[in-house]
Image (cartoon, rainbow, N blue to C red):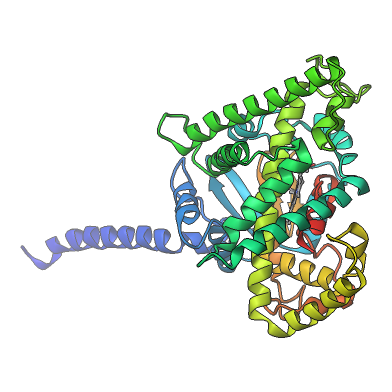
Length: 447
Ligand code: HEM
């Protein structure tokens, strides 16, 4: 072969090498570059499934599902995009975006109806209801969280904690979260349905646990899947609640004078027992609405409160100076209330340092790390174009740990709340029309 005849071959080979290099370059660096000037940065992941696999790996890893968001926040900044379960998700972590999305004055955001979650908590749950239905339900449920029910909870919760602590000295090891999950579950069940039978509580707690696990599982309803187990467990929880409703109605018709100081009693008091749909003009709730929302409240209140308490104990264990100040305050209050067998709601108002310590624990732990919403109209956030139909998530945990929002954010310092904090920066209980319904109840339990 002469020198000239080699040229086309070399050129061809060169082209092939360049093409291969271009592809390798694309695979390696595609994720890091902004797709276009106005679309949020982020990775599309694999075709169809996007980054679902990476998300599920995170869920099942020791680091937990927030690791998926944390690592991308570091890589891309305060606004990034990903694809999960066939949908686009944008994560935002600034106080301005939190205000805009959660307060939703523009009406451009709503909570998304997720079929698999509705299958588990019920499509009449506050978590799944349409915007209109949600308003009706919320106005009905908000009345239940009265001063009276909070006072009852303070007393009962104190009793449960004292009872549990008294058993600790006879146990070699105590797994705090396990104990606290049991205490918060008992407290929620007493408040909602007056259930106190240990055996019934045990089986109900197992079933609610299966429903919670299924909420994080891949929504595949086949006999061996976690999702299927959750669906079956939901069925059993509904049966328990139906039985309670039946018994309560029987008590009423047989003029049995037994009175229960719980949410179920209040909900049934205005419910005439018909199963017609509730409407704007009526405060009546259907049985389905009552059952779905009792389950929702158990789920919303049990895990969150137990996790918050566990984190709080961890932070106190690591910060002796904070613990000392707290002990001093608590000792003072105990002296003043020495004649009372248990804590009362009024005692909580004296706990000024404890309230800041609880707030600081909630800030650092960010028990609910992000809040998802659906975008109803094309809009712009943080200088990026956000499309209608995308999911937008306010990453509360990043805001809580942002050094531009909280100085020395990783330092456990309750006294930072001596001063006013930046607007829209404390999001432990959310903000706007979806703010946690049980926030005062939760605080009363944690103090
Ligand atoms: C430390 C404990 C708790 C934390 C950190 C917490 C946090 C939250 C957050 C952040 C939201 C709003 C989510 C969003 O905007 O998407 C929420 C909603 C909710 N929480 Fe809590 N929560 C706690 C305890 C409780 C308790 C004890 C109950 C009472 C039963 C409760 C009932 C609810 C309900 C029903 C909702 C839905 C409200 C709605 O969509 O209108 N939570 N919670």
